[in-house]
Image (cartoon, rainbow, N blue to C red; front, side):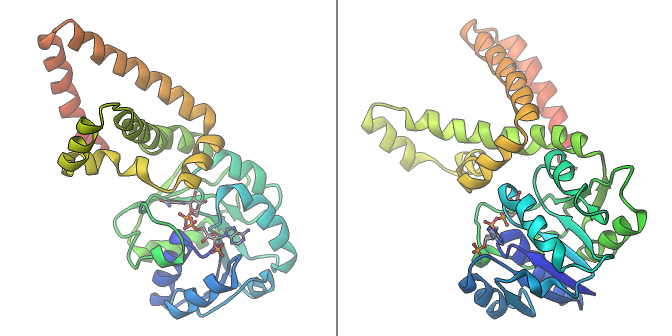
Amino acid sequence: MNIGIVGLGLIGGSLGLDLRSHGHQVFGVSRKEETCQRAIARGAVDDASTSLTLMKNTDVVFICTPLGVMQATVEELIPHLSEDTVLTDVGSVKGWVVEAIAPLWANFVGGHPMAGTADSGIEAALRDLFVGTPYVLTPTETTPTRATQRVEEVVRPLQVQIYHCHPHDHDRAVAWISHLPVVVSASLIAACMGETNSTILELAQALASSGFRDTSRVGGGNPELGVMMASYNRAALVRSLHSYQGALNQMITWIEQEDWATLEVALKRIQAARPQFLR
Ligand code: NAP
């Protein structure tokens, strides 16, 4: 198939690398000419341009820009598409994106590959980034079945696990397992930075090892993405944060009161629950 990718960064570039190796012709559009040239040099696209006219003969187009410019990008893209081109996106929030784009293009299917790294831009693109990871599609009652099937046909060979759900259910679920962890992890780093004794702070920085690396990873990632996810999934994220605050307050109370028995029961329950989130 002829595949279009708009936004040649971590996700767009990684999709390009994999889709080309599965025999598709990949055409990329990005904002900067330099990014287009790097995408060609890295083998992420067959051809690239800063002009959306390059999308004119595509069968499926993936919108891989930051969330904040997706709607404007699609409005600009539409005059260049043939009627049966299927449009999909990779945005980390689905309710807002689907509500903004579905009325503009009938053959639109919301999507979200649940894979990433802390890096961004075309240099961060990786082969096989999506192998073994969930790929969520959020068709609604008005999404043509053949459009959803075509996106599935393109992404399934990347060895992803395809899930279908309602856009708002997606947003509530990812608030728990993706957006809440970013805020919690960022707050952890911020709290550590608040140590006022410079000797202790330097010692903590020198001693930090794998535990801190794991727990701080998502909070120390791309700030632009963090702000986008918080602003576009605000309601679900705030709801999760209040619940988290309650859980944290509960832990503080048990520790302050030296209620080790209750704390141990809670930690055992938590230890048993964790694998259910990591299947
Ligand atoms: P990224 O690495 O920053 O890539 C986005 C690329 O879009 C930039 O490299 C930029 O390329 C290009 N761009 C920006 N504005 C544009 C415009 N107006 N027109 C065309 N291209 C434009 O970000 P990313 O991590 O790949 O994220 C992209 C999307 O994937 C986001 O919607 C995000 O929600 C979603 N997502 C991210 C992750 C993750 O973990 N990072 C995971 C799943 C989904 P130039 O260099 O040309 O400016």
